[in-house]
Image 1: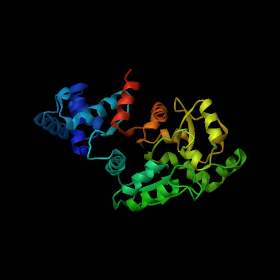
Image 2: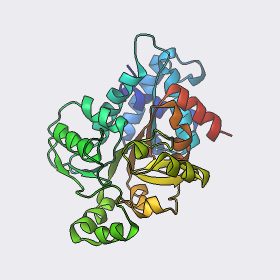
Image 3: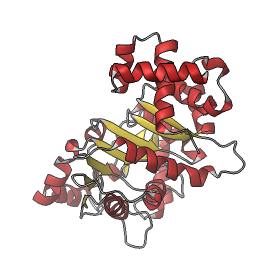
Length: 315
């Protein structure tokens, strides 16, 4: 399994202090811990030998990549799921790690926005039960047809159940049949109030979707393969909360987006903690677009994806 949270904080403290030359009080502010804790972590780092970052043991190899990615991408935290351990399956390990990170980052009183997809659903499915009264879990986008798996309401309800938290579902379709109908539904008081409350979230959990012919938007019937291909030719690169973004992470000006019932993308960007979990190799281009659009402050990826991102963003 990946190293535990306390070891990651120790590694980050050592990285900031020795590699970036920050003072202990600056490290404390950046990691939101006390200066005494920084001193303790640095002492432990010296004792364990990880302060020599270039010659760290294999246990910290992926931690080095995570710290480098944080610097290159300008995000708060990165977690890497190794792919070179024969006894572990990254596909099974990622949702377990993501659930552990999620529980470690949330606090009582948080308002958590949840999107949809296979990755989010699997995180919800393996999440341990926790008694976290005072937390509210809200759906970031409208719903899909009932036969479709990994629906937004399923993800939101299951995570709320695991946390013993209040769950608020958005009782509207993700995509309407016309732009006029979508505009009218957004104007309905209950829908308008729910969408207006999204900026009150201080945590978001989601992934980024692709624009392939077998992508979620095509599978659920929101777009035909031909319509998705046409959006790709027009510059579409990925999907955030059901809405199509371009290669720079900006909302596409297209009929699909105008027919969507979903959180305003600027509202999502304004959420302080935006935890994005991406597992599939074919999500590279969508993930690059999401990072450029500032949709991730906390990122969980595989080691191979992490290396591809370093090649892209360290230039």
